[in-house]
Length: 197
Image (cartoon, rainbow, N blue to C red; front, side):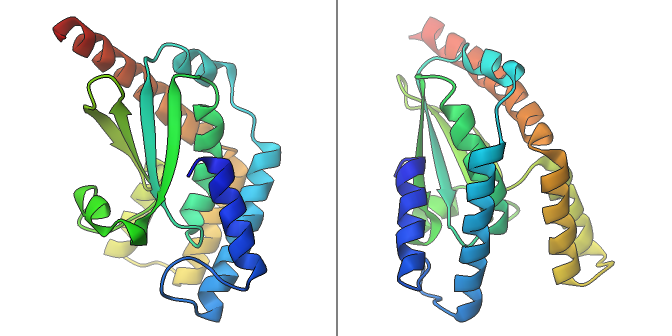
């Protein structure tokens, strides 16, 4: 799916009182409803910076394959921004697949042994080489989550509240910084691949 198809797909599921996956509990549906609101907010409020647009302009044709699910909180904050970044260049083709429908694919791109999402896989279109990956969240948030797992300092709901507040306050600045670096790195790798071909 492209991002708009994914967004519409989620909206249609919620209209039927459903979410994705086999777990159709009221809790999972409530997560999906909340995360759909977050997606809508980022669709309206996030505008990519000139710096990320400049970085996107330097790439050759690439595919961003994003593994995600609409009930995932981190995905709700990151996937809308990734879609807007991808739209900065006609050479970036972003496609979305649902994690639980592609278990073998997810198993190839685990994070510390876990099926953490969202996970972006960047593929050079000409060579089909994997240029790199990103995910499941900006490095600063990932560090906080890993630190929490080692030494919990609050309840899990309190941690989630802290992380969602961070996303709202950061306004995608950390994500952009990471992708300016990644796009530059991936573009350089593409140049090397072209020279080798």
